[in-house]
Each structure stands twice: as C-alpha cells, then as structure tokens.
Length: 190
Image 1 (cartoon, rainbow, N blue to C red):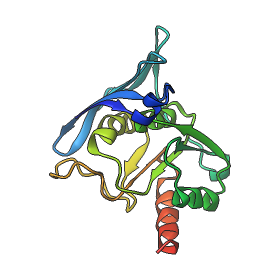
Image 2: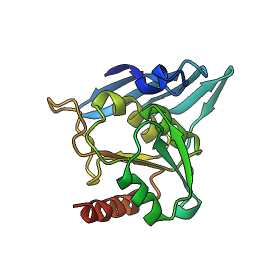
Image 3: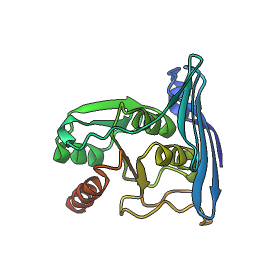
C-alpha cells in the first residue's frame, strides 16, 4: 500500500509535515513499513522481526516507544489540520497536557516510535489503509500498538479503503486504558 503524499494539507500550506508511505500486508497484517519525510530527510522503516529504525543525518537509530505509564506525563500527537472535540475530551479525561501537532499520520506515529509522543487518536473514518499500513508496521516493531477505537485490529483484507472505526496508536503501555476512555467519551457525545 502506497501513499505518495500523506499530509496533503501540510504540503499545500508549505509546512514540511508530510510524508511518503509504503506498507506491505501479509495475511491481513502489516509486516513492512516505510515513512519518508523529505523536508527533514527522515526515513522511518521496519520489517517484521527485524526492528524499527530511523535514518537521519547519516545515522541509523533503533526505534523504541517510551515506557511511560502515567498519562499526565504523556504527550498526545494531534492533527494540525483537523481539530476534534472528541479527541480533546479524551485528552482532558486522561489529564494529558502536552500536545504535539503534526500533519501526516505517519509522522505522528513516527513521534510515538521515537518516544516524543505516547498517544495518537483519530475517532472518525477519514483515515485510509494506506495512511496506517506502513506506520502500523513500524509502530509494532518499535513496541507500540495500533487498533481501531474498539480495540480491534485494523482491517487490511476488506474491500473498503477507509478505516471505518477510527484508530488508536499508543506506546502499548496505556493502550487498553485509552480505548476505555475513548469509548466513554464517544458515549457521552451520542
């Protein structure tokens, strides 16, 4: 699955927060991912069982998510272009104060893999499988988790190209708690 321009709005606005993404799915599971941010010459990559890496400034650095377990000390990666009252309500319930606004889904997940962020949530159905496939493979290898908002695996075998039930990406440590809070918040919005 290839997304030649993840973060189109950021590209149009002349902000460098866009990326080229490539992912490979085998038996419904992302097993290889590449996210390249050309403006920063940053390349995130991973292959199942081989680890996740960031190549930048001539160095190849292994990626590992943060093991932070206290929500109030976490940073939430949020969309720079798409404000969400639901995501903001989740952030408030988790007592997360630090925000990291970014454009591309791949760059938000990259921030999780580098340990600079801990949580990224998209509660709607506006992401597509090409937005999540490569980043999910990288996040898995870096020790994190990505599911839909019901804690189910994202579906890469379906004929649909959208992720109809949103997504939650975390460092893994807080994943189940984030799912519970998202579910609670969504109930209150009904």
